[in-house]
Length: 83
Image (cartoon, rainbow, N blue to C red; front, top):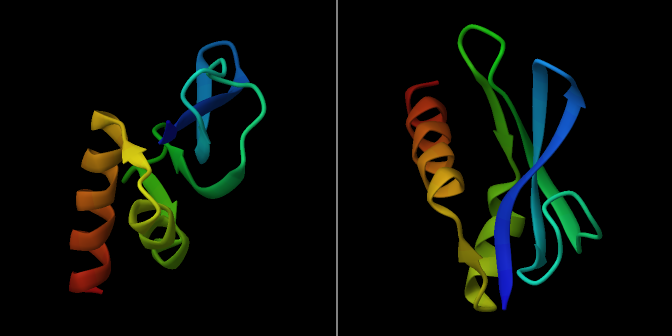
């Protein structure tokens, strides 16, 4: 099954995440199919960027979003609607 989830980057105590499309059997940070965005929780406000065109493409192909990515998507859509 293909999942849209977060892959952790950055240093100890300074996380930075990429939103990736990957096979659900792979490890969290290994071998992804495509990077479709990023999330930086350390900035204020939290920095989120998602390529919605590619996310919708993968969702149409049957990919599943994790709970955290679906929350980030909602926040991103609210910010872009207000901008």
